[in-house]
Amino acid sequence: MAPSLYILKVTYSYGGSMRKLFLGTILSITTISSFAAPQGTLLLQGTINQVLSLTVSPESGVNTSLDLTSTQTDLKVAEVGEQTNSNTGYKILIRTANGGSLKNGSFDEVSYSMKYDGSPVTLSTSDTEVKNESTGGVYDHSSDVEISYTGQPAASLTQGTYSDTVTFTIQVN
Image 1 (cartoon, rainbow, N blue to C red):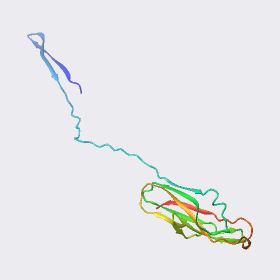
Image 2 (cartoon, helix red, strand yellow; image 1 turned 90 degrees about the vertical axis):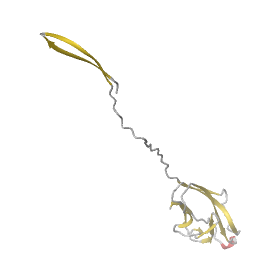
Image 3 (cartoon, one colour; image 1 turned 90 degrees about the horizontal axis):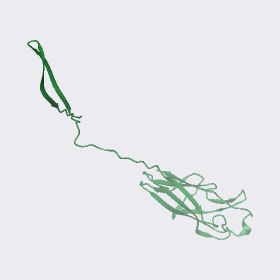
């Protein structure tokens, strides 16, 4: 607040005549304390949204051209990209439409086994957990998908296309 200047004027009457008397000036300096604290705080804050992403990249020309007459061991058929920043970790689930069999309609089937990121998988028509990262953090990992099967002579299998659909799911813990 700015200082104020006051002039004091007193009028009095003495012997019938009015006289003005200037007593002087009074300088009034008024200060108002803002009651400031010796310290203060400021909250700075930002938010990062959850990332949870899974990308299946088939091995070009392999996953759709399986030679069922030849035995295959740990044949890479895809790569799965896992990305998350979950603070509780994540898990990968797998299920197959035919429970681990390449089927030709209702005619014949060729059973196969699978590895995910180097570990054997139990194939089922229900979701099966195949990987669990129990520690929270930032993950950007690629996992190989490999299959193995025993080849059959062509004359022992009915002509047609043999297939199975595999579904991969990523979830936070």
